[in-house]
Each structure stands twice: as C-alpha cells, then as structure tokens.
Image 1 (cartoon, helix red, strand yellow):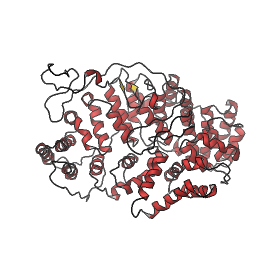
Image 2 (cartoon, rainbow, N blue to C red):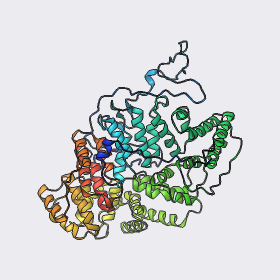
Image 3 (cartoon, helix red, strand yellow):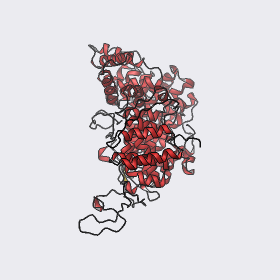
Image 4 (cartoon, one colour):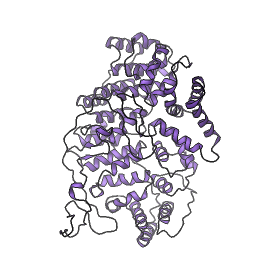
Length: 604
C-alpha cells in the first residue's frame, strides 16, 4: 500500500452560493500610539499570544441582544469512557446520572455559545452585533476569503473584528462560526488570536468543524498538548490517523506510556501515514515524562512542510531545513515569528513579512531584531540593520537619524521588505523634529509614520510638503483633518509625477479622497474623467458592502473589505478602495479607513 503523507495544511472550503455572489474577482497585536484617531492608551508591545486593545473611533456600534445557545456536541474526555454534559450535578452528595462525568464548574460558570470572543468594546473589540444576524452568510464569506491581504491595516482591522465578542446569530451553531473565524485567522498568520477563539469555547461544546480547526490551531501554535481535550471528538469526527497520533501524545504527556506506544504502533501498522510524521509524534512523546527514549529526526527525502510537521518540529525545537522553509506560505512564516521555540534565525527571516502583513507591531518587530542581534555572533546583515536602527532612533542629530532611516528604507530587496522597514522606523520617524532637512518629497518619512499609526504627528509636516507631491497625497487621505486645496487640479498635479503603471497610484488617491468625502463631488467627477476611472462601478460585492454599511454592521464591513483586498495592491481596482473606505467611514471606522487609504499610496 502506498504510504500517505499526513498532510494537515489548512484547506479552504468552497464558498456557499451567497458568499460566491459577493466576493470580488480579485483575487499586532496592534500597537497604536496615542493620537491615532481618537486618543487611546497604548498597550504594551508583544510579538506573542493574546490580542490587544486597538483604539476605536467614538462611534461604537450598539450592543445587540444575545442569541439562544446553539446546538452542542457531547464529547468524551481523554482517558475516560464517559461524557461531559451540561446537566451533571456539581455538589458532593448529589446524584450524577450514569454515563456522565462530574463537572468541576457550576452550570452558571460555563461559557455559552451565544457570545464568543475575547475582545469586548471596553478592550478594543467591536460591538456584539457587529456581524449582524446572518450567520451562515458571514461564515461562508470567511471560508472563501484568502490570505494574505494586500493591506496591513486591513488585516489589523479584520483580526480585531474576528477576535471581538460577537453574538451568535440564530442561523448558525456558535462553535461552527468560531471555527470559521479561527480558520481565517490562521490563514492570516494570526495563530495566537485563533487559539484565543478556540479556547473561548468549552471543549465539550465543540462542533465537529471546530474540533478539526482546533487541531490546526494548536499545531500552528506548536502546542500539541492543546489538542488533548479534543482527542475523543477528533477520533469520532475527524481524520482518524492524525487524531490517533494525537491520542498517543496525550497519553504520554499524562504519564501513561502503554496506550501511547499502542497508538503509535497502530498508526504505523496501518501503512497510511508517513513514518516521518509518526517519528515526529514519537519525538514529542519522547520529550514527555513517560517517553523513555530520544528520537532522531532526519529530513531526507521530505519535500513538503505541512502544519503537522511544523507544529511537531517546532514544539520539540527540531530544526527545520532552510530548503523546506523556502516554500512555506505567508501564514506559516507568521506562525514561525510568533513561536518562541522557533530558531531565532528563522524568526528573523520571517519577521519582515509578518510586520508588513500586520502580525507584528512596529515595536514588536524592532524588539525581535534587537533580541536577535544580542546573541553571540549574529549575522553581519542583521548587525548592519540593527546598527542603522540604533542610529535612526538615537543619532546625534536629526539629519543623522533621517539618513539612517533612508538607508534602512533602501535595504529591502522587494516591496514587502521595504514596507517592513517603514514599519520598523515608525516611532523614529514620528520623533524626528519637523525642522530637519529631509528629501524634497519625504513620502517615505510620512509613510513610515502612518505605518505605525502616528497620524497626529504626521500632520505636523503638512506645511513642509508641496501640493501634488507623493507625501502630500499620503497626508491628504491619511491626516485626521482634511487638507485645504484638495481639488481636481491638485490630483492632476499628483498624477503629473506618478510613475506607477497606468496612473494606478493617482486613481487610488482619488478613490481614497472620494470615499472619505474629502473632495467635492464635482471636482471628483472632473478628476475621474481625466484619469479615465469609474469609481461608481457596481457589482454584487459593492452592493453587499454598501448594504452592510447601511445596516450598521462594522464587522461585516471589515470582512467584506478584506475580500476586496485579496491579492496585491497593484491588482486592486480603484473602485474597491473607494467602496471600502466609504463603507468603513459610514460605520464609524474612519480612522481605519484613513490608514488603509494612506497605505495604498505608500505601497503602490
């Protein structure tokens, strides 16, 4: 029998009809400073677990009613033959029904499926009714949304939306909706936030869909032990062999080596799983107290890095060959950055992409580079990069600091690396005195500030920039207050120095200005005619995002905005940006709308 490689990479299910009709053809922990949008406290930076509060505009969506508890799935506990239920008695002396397990918590302390998510409006999340009442519709769009997204700020907003404590609509099981939220977060690289969603649900209330997603979530977090509560349900509803290996690992972690060895032998004798994947599981088992032996891992003849291999190898600090790393997707690169057990060299190599995608905040990115540079004999390229960062933050003069920043912005070998450099220098750019001599068109300096959310600091540079320059364009859409003189003539001046293909940057500028309502409709029509662009184009997707905005559903707007930002900025139609910015502004997310529009002009 041909050996089957245990491939547990994230699969993307086909979209339901409703979602397929609205999806466009296109295909940081957020650390924001005081002054972004409405001033709010800045959380402490961290490149690992737990979503943090992201400042929100003052128009917070109203809280909705709590829906009824969705159907549940009864799962047996690992190592037992009985099931945990909601009906058991919790006090000594009270009878417990046969076939059930006494639960440690009183019924009132158990978590309901009617509202799921770690972030509340008080901690930076959206309102409970942010996704409206059409649960199956929202879930289908989540399953159909690919990642990574073109926009760093779009990804930050979507992460915040998916992590919010939202009400479960009557039309869907809360555990199923949580599974789709967690799966999309994983595809975005947000492994720690996905784990927070999964852990918001009592495991015995997990649906089969959530059970399967949970395995992917804990593998992405390199946390094999996290799978243990879901093992029995996984064996009943999931891929038998992967859960059989998980059962063996969990038995070993609990100190029971007999069942652990039996489980591994049974999977091996089936001949349906690669022996390499079994060895990785045995290595995790060998690291447990009942392991008893050390397993040597040889990556010979392995040509694919699956999530199983990533999770098991990372959990045991097993080095992953660079050849396999070359083919890992953006999500797995982000998982690597967030996993403290990963090799520091691998984390640093993956960090620029994670920073540009919004997985790492500016300060978290700089902290990671600093930690790597403090190791013995760091690579010369890393030392040169951190030396420039040190000069950018603490140079003897403003001119020296700006020169160091310019050098960093020029180091990148591709657009993602160059934008990541702007993310790294965001705080240094914001601290640069306005009187410092800079380039004639300091769009990179302004763009760096907006990459970190320093919009109130960026507007101090307005008097120093020329109308029609690229820096002016970034400020015109990104500043907290509209600039004077935003006319068709100014847009024409901007396009006069536009070196992007088919004046794409100028078209995005007009889309941003129009969506934000910062240019008169007549002036907008004149500029659109000059640029030969139709911002009013209507599709099923544009109607869907406009209707979600009209219903006052910021979560659904953020999700539909993400579907409109799949792929790359260069391929995004200007009318997509117009509708995204307009809809976000209408649901009280004007700050996020400005950041997305400013990012477009920096990255195109």
